[in-house]
Length: 399
Image (tube, rainbow, N blue to C red; front, side):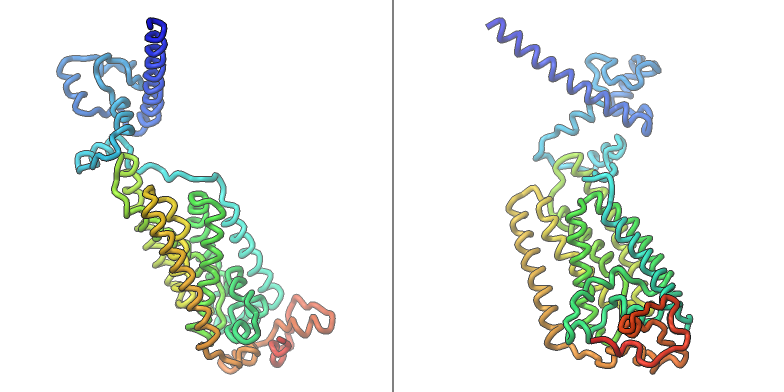
């Protein structure tokens, strides 16, 4: 019996030392940012003339036996009863201790997919401009190529998608941009929030949302703006914002049950401001040439329903997890099914867009068909400088 009691006592002391050491590390990590703040015990210690003013005690949460240091209070806060509710005093104390507003936990250190898309997009636009020339500002004020160049490289073209079955055009527009200004705006937003959220979500979830939103944005653009050539990754970026809003919505359905939950709730409030601000910035691009509002709206809605599927697993309650997972899967299937059905049955496409050069020559007297790729491929030559002599119907070679 004595041996067993000694063993239990040793284990208890070892566990206590582990808690103290954990509190010590937590204190040292936070002391540089918040100094020597104390709770109510500090005032009592000062009145009694205790050793709190001794500089040697800074960073040591165990220097006063029988007195609770801040680090020990922090440790207790981490171990609070899960059923306890938090009031305004708890919020104030958590903010004072630096527990609210902690950095987001990242699942991975790097964001390879986001970086890859940014690099590819930055390479493709200069190649297009070098190959087929830069359009006058009267035709493309974004400082970019001619519309027929965008079409040749895979822009959204409703008649080619619906009637000719070129479904790859639902994806390829995210690699293209109307011009340098358009590219700069999209890449800046994508490099900031795209990188951050890929590290937070993981590359697999990020790719599912990004590509799914890209397809959704192109379908919406085909359905509601079939008479326009459009390009850009802004629809996919809007999908990232929609998915983030979905994640915030799902996590807000849970009640804060600990100080850590309180910190996460505070962080989500800041994220809402980030999402709203990003949506406004990207939405402003809807008014530039060869970009349309339908793609932005479609991408955001697609990202939201995909977010319901991907982030429903973050909910602690399995009942709510199953409920929102079913709602997300149902909404995603219904959204894409209805959109695809409408695109193939009710959309009236413009046959004139089979010849993009001829179509835009109706609106611009100085339009030149300088990117006659079909003719170059047919005759075995590839002219990267463009055809300075112009041409008639550079898009007529499309099958």
